[in-house]
Image 1 (cartoon, rainbow, N blue to C red):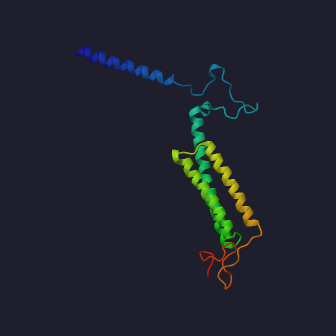
Image 2: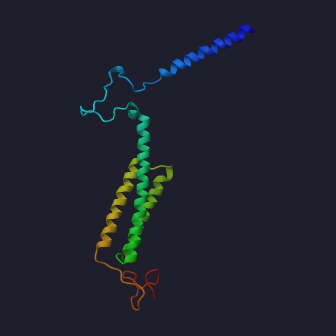
Image 3: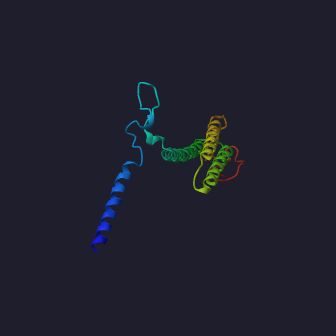
Length: 176
């Protein structure tokens, strides 16, 4: 009985000593110059990133994923801002109903493409670049259509027959 407890105690002491010695030898903590690794000298114009943890592939991947999520949030904000620009252009009369319909159709196509890209649960870098390019092009189209000289007439006074491009149809902008 005494031998069994002595063996257990020795085994636990051996495992504890192995555990404690292994923790200090698992990784380079970045303090010290082991293996001739260059140290950072701010006056030499060397690399700005001298922290060895920042060169870790897992850290770089996490940074890339965070960057993609931030860009995706910015993409959604840009989509909302462009939709607001279209609605404001319709309200101010800078966009005719045909122009607004075309811009809304383009905006809807971008939203559908984003939904298709997100079907696997994430946006890849190439998919995000494609959406950003399409959204930039849509922004240029909105700017062009708002700054051309086509204007929608005021709605509500007699004889206006709706806005230009409505072809006299009753609806949201054309009244009969």
